[in-house]
Amino acid sequence: MAPTLRLFFAAVTLAAAAYPAAGQGDGTPDDAIRVNQVGYLPDAPKVAVVCALAPRAVTQFAVFDAQGKRVFGPRPATAGGSFGPCAQTYKLDFTALRTAGTYRVRAGALESPPVRIGATVWRGLAEMPLHYMRQQRSGFNPTYNTTVHTKDGIIVDHPTRAGEYLPATGGWADASDYLQYVTTSATATFQLLQAYRDNPQAFGDVYLADGRAGRNGVPDVLDEARHGLAWLLRMFPDDSLMLNQLGDDRDHMYFDLPPNDSADYGWGKGGARPLYPCTGIAQGLLRYQNRATGYASTAGKFAAAFALGAQLLRGRDGAFADTLGRKARAAFALGEKYPGACQTAPGRGPYFYEEDDWADDMELGAAALFALTGNATYRTRAMAFAAQAKVKPWMGADTASHYQWYPFHNIGHYEAARPAAAGDRARLAGYYRDGLQAVANRATNGFNVGIPFVWCSNDYMTSFAVQALLYRRLTGDGRFRALEQAAIDWLFGANPWGVSMVIGVPADGNFARDPHAVISIRLKYQLDGALLDGPVYSSIYKNLLGIALTKPDAYAKWNTGHIVYHDDWGDYSTNEPIMDGSVNVLYLLSWLDRR
Image (cartoon, rainbow, N blue to C red; front, side, top):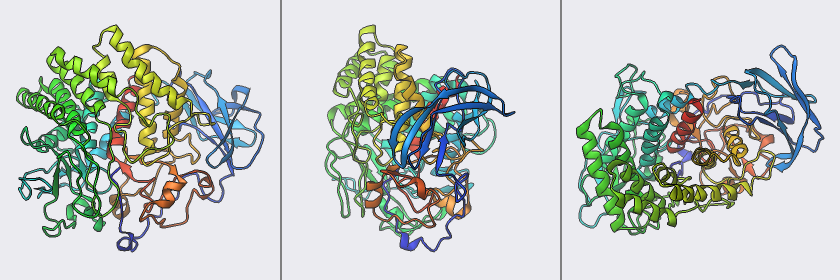
């Protein structure tokens, strides 16, 4: 999520999108049964959750088929305590129901939305986030059918090269503003490639390389990954200059669509945007500065994306793959030379990606280079870095700074474990287990979730599900299976608001109709496949700058607890789509689809 300080005084004249929240409003009962609106695989855990806004007793439940026939239960409900706005929660466990079909869960007078069970309920959904990624493109953008941000960019904050123009058009906007970061873009590029490598059957070919409709013989996920790789190469133009950021929060001055972006960085409205390099020291040209200490967090991400790209594309474009392989080795070497974190640069506002960890990125880069080259030195380095990054520090904590421990799951442990000997594989899986257990220790509520509800909580939730899945794949140990499923269920509707946090998924579900995105506001464009930032602690929401709801809160009665969510474009903290989180969800969906 791009750190956002919106100038709402310039934007409030826009008409707020008049979308009601599906299934909400004056007629909604004060209690509800929340379910995964996409559905459940037959062998998956299946737990609906009653959220009661006032104390009440729920003793039992039953499940009914489409004809109204009871097919499961009555079974006892399990009290889960209070959570958020829910004075009481109750778990309704119907895991034993495996027969494909569409059902309703009933507890007393309460009835759930439709509940789907089947082997194909996730079929095709891994491609949904690609719709959002194509909409986020810089360079040629198929949504607008034109090329955007063609004047990028001019180097700033560099001791010898400030003021130099370098062509850097391409890549993706980070969220619903137009900032672009290697931090998130390289991670997204790697996960696009990783999803194709691990689950190729989840992806088809119905779009051209430029994002327009048509077939080109290349899976669309690889087309999108290559778009990311091409931009990353521009951001690492030579082996001594590593660029990390394009633009800064001055892009928030105007609420413009990309083709007529009026941001002025000192070179005129709609002019060039600044390119921030990794320097290893604090950065920030305006009021605020970051706490950067090195290159390695960015260098490791570069190396990983380039190395995996070289692996997967060498049979399709040998010359491009060779370039990627060479740049992967150069990026890794730069990270070894300058250890530390290369944070993003703030501007007028205090918000930036406060990434403090970097050993996990170098572990991932080393693991990807070992897979590409077979050079055992990279395997040794991967294990050494893994020992420095055993567990993501947010796991088990109740708070974290913005993107402080990013990516939110250590992708490197899985990549290093894939070819590892038994002992190293067990050690890496143990690191995963320890982190998962720390979150599990906090998951004592009815929704069975234990992440901190900080900015971009949905990305944390997705990463917990992915890490649990990868741990289960590495070990066969199912001890976290219920929590893995609970995180998936939360993302797709089993949360206090009954909202799918991925726009358009499922198509007939309750999802955001008024996200913080200019294309949605101005063109009423539905951002299918976009993951929202997600709920935050009410204390965070109340203290962020520039937030103002534009209409009555459709979820007001569900926003009375310690976490809040608003389907309102005025709330950038909970309702802004995020590019890297959308690809994180894509990776998760590719595994769910592979069944």
